[in-house]
Amino acid sequence: MVARPLQELETEMLVLTVFEDELNNHDYFHALDEKLGGKIARIIESGEIQGKFREFTIMHVEGIGPKRILMMGLGKRKDFSLDRIRSIAANSSRYARRIHIKEMAIHDFSATGVDASDSAESIMEGVLLGMYRFDKYKSKKKSPSKLLESVTIVAGSDASVSALQTGAMKGSNLAESANFVRDLVNEPACFMTPAIFAQRAEEVAQKTGVAIQVLDQAAIEAEGMGAFLAVAKGSDEPPKMVVMEYTGKPGAKKIGIVGKGVTFDSGGYDIKPSAGMLRMYGDMAGAAATLGTIQAIAQQKLPINVVAVMPLAENLVNGKAFKPSDILTSMSGKTIEVLNTDAEGRLLLCDALTYIQKHHQPDVVVDIATLTGAAIIALGRTVSAVLTNEDALYQRLFKAGEYCGERVWQLPLYEEFRSQLVSDVADIESVGGRSAGTITAAVFLKEFINEGQPWMHIDIAGTSMMEEEIARYVKNPYLPKEGGTGTGTRLLYHFVESFVES
Ligand code: BES
Ligand code: ZN
Ligand code: ZN
Image 1 (cartoon, rainbow, N blue to C red):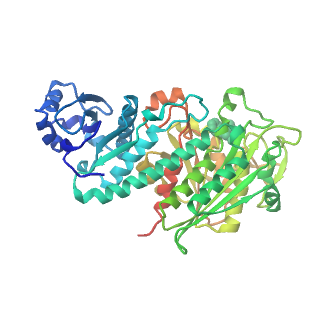
Image 2 (image 1 turned 60 degrees about the horizontal axis):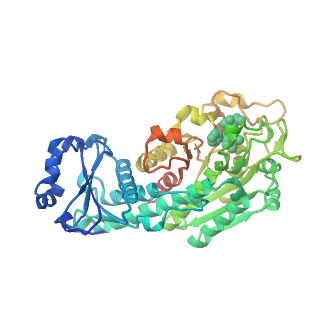
């Protein structure tokens, strides 16, 4: 963080930005361009730089501090957002890495009217999320001597330095937590069993001082979690349930978060076709996002309380596995007729929801899960589905999503959908047929929510992982082209932060 005239800054590469519709309005680098004899102004006049979003030009310059200038287009001012800052920062740092530069500088964006702290937060998020790679299992890693090591944010004024510092620290923490979630999701199932996930959670607890309890199979049985246990029966890997408690301010609101942790979803006896099974090592993305959230909240020391519950199991097939038409008794006492063993996530979640309400009395409960393929059909790969029994919760989450670039959209929880889950033999069926699959999954969960308990469900089946053909049209430079996106952590962080009383 420095507040210094741009032309005096010693840097390998300085990023400058221009709005498409205000090409001549760039007072902030006027002095620098004077030193260059008006070189940038001439290039702009020639039409070579148009300022279109993410369009860039590199210039090698002499006689001033920076050795190179990367001109980046911001697009039209009316379309400007924090997310565009993230994208520009990601593009710039990826470009720096490509040309083997170890250090770069970028100006803050407070001149555009955004808050200085938000500006630095978004820059750091863009850089760190954009630099992410999962190359743990490659024997030939990219040489570390070629990695970007430092980014300088140039403050528009001395007055904004401290806000920029706070924002940069927050952005780094959030992006590092999201990258941690990506790592968890990207581990194949052979290296991410319920027990290994629980170990990772123990490490987070140790690092952050958050209290942790790991329930083993016997403890889960003692709680009577018959729905959760049924899913785990078909695997040699025993189930675990991780419970973490962060106390940031005794007496303040307590937010409960429950995340689906199916470390591999084969579908069970209702087995998935191979194409659909391939990426099901990522079916613990809800639990990973939950762990990332509590880590980020603890690191930022938010004055709020969070309890997180992560039920973990593998959905496989063997001679003991649960079967379609089995009837299960959940922790709540409600009986469930299993219509399809591939609808396993709701079975983990219903017991975890009962558990968190019984033992922790949270003011608000949110669950996050890769729950239904139907969420991808409804909202695609960039918007998560949300259902709630209290609209005010959705309003908060929507705001959080718009702020951090992890977008959400609400689906209705109308009473009539309950009729799709009526069972002849048990209290409820586990599946409500093909229509409105994301909604009926949420309606199932709602059956396990106590009267008057504010609750919200987030379905991240579409948004938790990226695929190359989707990346081609999503074109988001701070998301990976393949694998875990880390979705949920930044979203839930900002949601929880909205409950902090100032
Ligand atoms: N884990 C899947 C949902 C999923 C699908 C996540 C695609 C990510 C990408 C879930 O357990 C599942 O299989 N759901 C079934 C439910 C159905 C049997 C009612 C589905 O969506 O097909
Ligand atoms: Zn499934
Ligand atoms: Zn699943």
